[in-house]
Amino acid sequence: MDVTDIVEYNQSLLNSNDPSHSFFQLDRNDPTAGFDFDATWLPPHGYPSETQPPPAILGRQDVLTTRLIIGSHFAQYLRISLEEQKGYTATVGISTNKLASKLVGNLNKPRGQTTLLPPYAINSGYASSDGNNTLESNLTKFLDSHDIGKIPGIGFKMAQQIRNHVLARPPDFDTGLIYGPTKESVTVRDVRLFPGMGPETLEGILGGPGAERGIGGKVWNLINGVDDSEVQQMRKMPYQISIEDSYIRLDTIPQVLKELRMLATSLIKRMHADLLEDDEDPEFENTKRWIAYAKTVRLSTRPRPPLNTDGTRTRSFNRISRSGPLPNFVFNLKESIDAIVEKLVQETLLSMFRKLHPQPSGWNLSLMNICVTNLVETASESSSSRGRDISKMFKRQETVLREWKVEDRDVPPDPMPQKEEPYDQAEPSAGSDAMESIMEGSEDALCQTQNTINDDGLWEDDDEDNEGLERCIECGALLPGFAMPAHERFHSLEE
DNA sequence: CGGGGAGAG
DNA sequence: CATTCTCTCCCCG
Image (cartoon, rainbow, N blue to C red):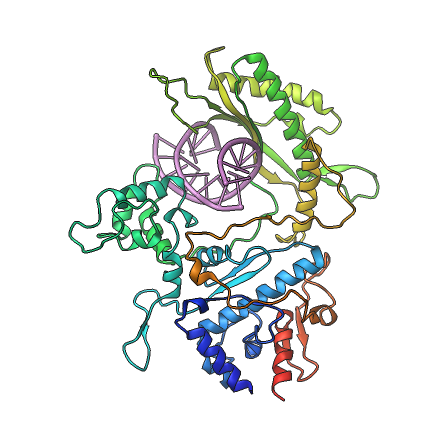
């Protein structure tokens, strides 16, 4: 077996119409799992370009497949690095846009990854050279199997509206489509193929005052696998920080005052935890400084809907709110939290509450929320602090959570807690047949070469723009770290 | 910008 | 497993 054979094998596997091959899962125990020794010849971020044509061997794979293979290796590298260096497990989906990647990332949980294989042809698929054999888009097949409400961006309300439209009348009217007389789960396929369905129809269903502009076209794109939304850089500061609590019964001013004090206390502590930083100034020791101030405070309540005349309950999730400037004394570090809270409640929150509920009684709240927003960062070191402060965020979250957790089992000195969800039932709606990973294997570690080669890990706290490239000892090629194992496999195979 | 609806985790 | 809590994005006036 030589390189060509393996490429042929991969090629047939990747292009197979067999649904069980529609997805693949990288398995570090499977020596062929890489598929792709050759993919390592591509530039680090890139795809074959005019200036840097890929080696001939790559011509056997279409560009899309190559990109997906690279993505799979990168994902594998990230997951293993994350687990080895930080102890967190992760599940990854690899595809060509956020929508498809997110959905395919629901498979092989936990601690796995899945790549949605081509063909991705969106409209009509394409005819292969040996006849009019049309390959159906694997992306469409995958999407079609989902319940309409499972599509990210289609939430409870829109899903319900779409379902109402599709189920309104039986689809046997003028088309010969015989589906179950009354089916309860409306899939993406049901919607996509519904008579007259299209962006305009969806706009009619979902549009209206308050609806997102162009929502019909957007949803139509989504159910056709089209998603041009960009991956956003993580922000260092959130837009708002809020604390809320829900209540069975909250209908008197004294109760409200008490709860406002509780919430405000939590919020001030949150602000201290999240917005306060150890001052780096060596002159003064143990001083803190605000890395951001909030300009606005908002009080929201959710009134319990009174009660219908016939005694039925009208479920309402609606919140009402009032906002205003956040007084500066909340940032005074000399003052005690209790004193700050009391002033805030009396001077600010109470009057907001009276705007929301002018009557001294007659209301009953199921929720109250206090939020500080309009965060402005103080003149910071403007460090190149990109989004990559995940570990700090986790730590901060832990300490905050610990403070407010009533029952808090002792945390062992174990450096990293495992936060993976313990269960994930196989989605019944998600076309489980096609979802089987094609590779099984024991869970021993096989290729752990990254560490020896790559001394400075991805998450070294102080890595500052290392090129991230490594040189192959064998041939001297410069490669991104994640590609090195596959590249070594290439050398071992080329004889 | 303030108030609110919808949605993601 | 469902509910609660936190946060984001968007529309409208």
